[in-house]
Image (cartoon, rainbow, N blue to C red):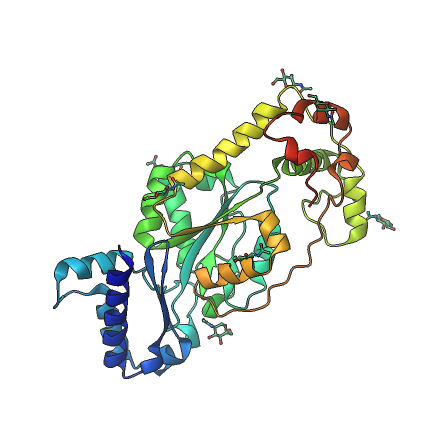
Length: 346
Ligand SMILES: *[C@@H]1O[C@H](CO)[C@@H](O)[C@H](O)[C@H]1NC(C)=O
Ligand SMILES: *[C@@H]1O[C@H](CO)[C@@H](O)[C@H](O)[C@H]1NC(C)=O
Ligand SMILES: *[C@@H]1O[C@H](CO)[C@@H](O)[C@H](O)[C@H]1NC(C)=O
Ligand SMILES: *[C@@H]1O[C@H](CO)[C@@H](O)[C@H](O)[C@H]1NC(C)=O
Ligand SMILES: *[C@@H]1O[C@H](CO)[C@@H](O)[C@H](O)[C@H]1NC(C)=O
Ligand SMILES: *[C@@H]1O[C@H](CO)[C@@H](O)[C@H](O)[C@H]1NC(C)=O
Ligand SMILES: *[C@@H]1O[C@H](CO)[C@@H](O)[C@H](O)[C@H]1NC(C)=O
């Protein structure tokens, strides 16, 4: 949609809503992100609503009797992400029944910082990010079991330590590309667009570091370096040091094609999910740029908060310290498109 037309429609809809609700501060902004209208209704306003005005408000969302130009209204309607008011079967949302909830999914790969990212999100009082819910095979057996699982999450009927229950304003989970996501991408995109699920891609640029993390983690799964327990994520410098003492050997024969394959998976996924409302994040940017976390909160329509995590990075410092056959790796990557992985240090 071209910008002037977009602004006009946006203004028109916001005016309509505020006049119905006699609440001028009803909307905070209306922005054009990814060409989509993002309507942010302030909490103060929603709290003032009686049941009657709330019904009217929901009618406006649906826009059933368009007066000006039905064509234009249809366009806007298609672009407004639905505001969700889930009605969980297992508990009552209490004082927060009238707060809208954003649905999201973090699409990522193993060892790309998604665990750390989730602990950051869950430090927000209104975010419930429920972890790797598709880890167990039986939940991703076929598209029906996938959708049943998704429905439970988005209806707030999924319970774990991340659940904020009644006052969640954003609910989601992380989904690894190899957990049925790429296999069933067509139906999942359809579901996401139908249900208004926002997608956060989280990828890692430094694929060689990711590979080291992956090898070390799968080694620890068997060796259990920390006094007999396997840990994927650690919370102290001592634990990090203990885990990083193990130096994996990288298969230099398959190195280039392995890196390429991972790279292509990310590209393919972004392409498959292009029609969803989405944002792309890189682990490296999250580490170095605090603004990124604010972008995420804005994308999810949340009040901004300082987010914190207790997790400690396992492999810190130059990569050459953590790979047994570093010389082979240097020889293999020298002169290729991946040569920068040898130097970059984060
Ligand atoms: C999906 O798997 C479930 C559980 O095994 C089964 O009951 C159901 O019939 C399957 N659905 C389809 C469409 O294959
Ligand atoms: C966030 O949670 C707090 C505390 O539970 C609640 O008072 C507030 O209304 C929630 N905010 C949103 C936007 O739902
Ligand atoms: C392992 O256990 C011993 C004593 O039980 C403790 O002193 C040590 O710090 C532990 N090591 C790690 C890496 O947790
Ligand atoms: C390294 O990769 C090559 C090519 O994929 C494979 O043939 C070989 O078995 C691998 N070596 C090890 C030690 O896994
Ligand atoms: C996504 O689609 C838009 C148009 O719908 C296109 O301009 C853009 O290049 C696509 N992006 C990718 C990564 O395919
Ligand atoms: C940090 O991210 C913001 C947007 O997310 C961007 O505008 C800014 O340029 C970034 N800063 C640096 C130093 O890269
Ligand atoms: C990379 O290759 C060039 C020649 O192609 C060589 O001069 C250079 O020493 C190599 N670098 C390393 C770090 O092996």
